[in-house]
Length: 125
Image (cartoon, rainbow, N blue to C red; front, top):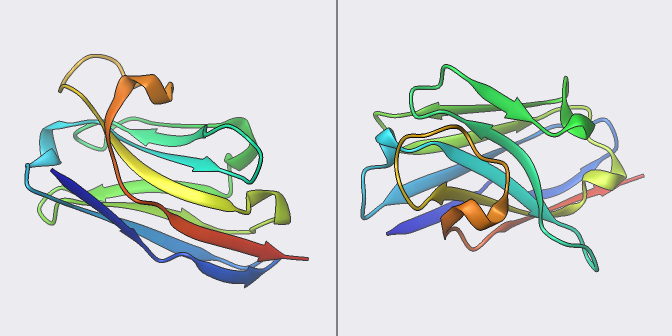
């Protein structure tokens, strides 16, 4: 089981980035998926999640209207489109999958058992 994030980088305030998370070793098309982030000196926090079929999404309040989570089940890839970026969005971003399929979408990191290595997003003012 392997999750690999890409697409991070350095961007100015107001800019955009699209993160990708490629899954291999297991077909994640039946799993809900999520994005989390961790800023220096802070705990890992929930960013967004999407159901296995893409029908339902949920976001943390601070990114609503700016970030969009999506997935391509055929490609086993998860995305996070980030627009209107702010310096407070600076963090390492992780994609994650829960330990099992089904059930409600989850926002707690403890509910996720598979994690990528993370990709750095830095937003300058």
